[in-house]
Image 1 (tube, helix red, strand yellow):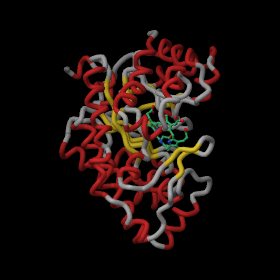
Image 2 (spheres, helix red, strand yellow):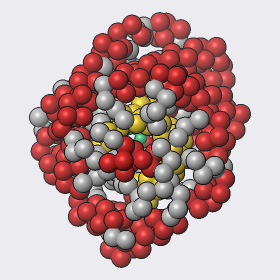
Image 3 (cartoon, protein in one colour):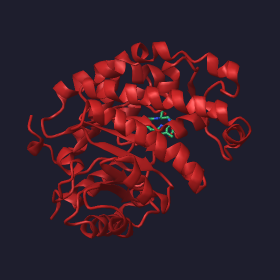
Image 4 (tube, helix red, strand yellow):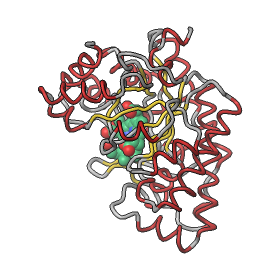
Length: 343
Ligand SMILES: Cc1c2[nH]c(c1CCC(=O)O)Cc1[nH]c(c(CCC(=O)O)c1C)Cc1[nH]c(c(CCC(=O)O)c1C)Cc1[nH]c(c(C)c1CCC(=O)O)C2
C-alpha cells in the first residue's frame, strides 16, 4: 500500500495534508460502550496480551469514527512488566507495581525475557495490518524512559515524584543504569513493533515536564535522541512522534535535538507559537483540550476549526492535548471528526 493512500502517514512524513488527518490519544477507552462491554471479559493486562481482544479494542474507534490512525491497544507499563516487574491496575488508583529503588531491585529485572514476553503485542500488530482499512495508519508506541522510570521507582502514579527525585540526587549511578536499561529496551521493543507492522511509533513522555532544564536535557532529550537514532538506523522511513508533555519552551530544543519527525503538543501549548520555534519539516500534532471535547457544543466546533486553520499550510495531525476523558459522550467525538473534515 502506497503512502499516498494514507493521509496520516503522509502528514507524519512532513506533508501539509488538508484537511489534517485525525486520531486521538486514548481513542479506545471507557467512553465507548463497546469498550466497556469487552472490559468485563478480562483484566487490563490480559486484554493487552490477548491478540484477539487487543485487535478488537484497537479497531473499535476506527470503525465508529473512521479515524486516520489506529493506536495499538496496550500500555506504556507493559515494558517493565515484560522485564518481570509486577503490575496490576486498581480501580481508582491506577497502576500498582513493587517499586524499584535499590541495586538489588534493579538486579531482579530480566531484560532477556522482554522480547518474548511482548510477542503477543507483535501478533496483534500483524493482525491489525491485515484487518485495518488500507487508508488507516497503524501506530505503535512506548513510554519514554524517564516517564516509565517514574512509575517503576514510585511504584505507580505519584503526586510529588519524591522517590525518583531522591534517586536522581542520591544515587545518580543507579538511576543512570535504570535509564540505560529502559533506553535500550524501548528502542528494541519499538523496532519489534515496526517489524510486526507498525507504520509509525510514538514516545509518550508524560512526566519529563517535572524536570529543570539540565535534567530535561539529560533524562528526556538525550535518551530520546538515542532511541530515535537506533530506530532510524534500522527503519529510516518510519516516522517517530515525540510527546514531551508539559515540556513548555523546552519542546523546541526537544524537536531540534532528538530528531523526531513529529512533535505532539499538550493542551497548554500555543500551536502557532510553537510552529514559529520549530522547523517546518517537523509535523505538529495536537492539541485540543480534552475538556472542550467533553463539553461539546458550539465551543467544540469553534475551537476545532481554530486549531485546524491555525496550522493550514504546515504538516499537522489533529489530536487532543491529552487522552480522551472517560465521561466524554461518544457523539462529541463524531462531531469533532466531522468538523475537522468539513472544509
Ligand atoms: C502515563 C501513561 C500510562 N499509559 C499511557 C500513558 C501515557 C499517556 C498519558 O499521559 O496518559 C499510554 C496509554 N495507555 C493506553 C494506551 C492505548 C492506546 C490509546 O487508546 O491511546 C496508551 C497509548 C491504554 C490504557 N491504559 C490504562 C487504561 C485504563 C484501563 C481500564 O480501566 O480498562 C487504558 C485503556 C490504564 C493506565 N495506564 C497508565 C495509567 C496511569 C493508567 C490508569 C489511569 C487510567 O485509567 O487512565 C500509564
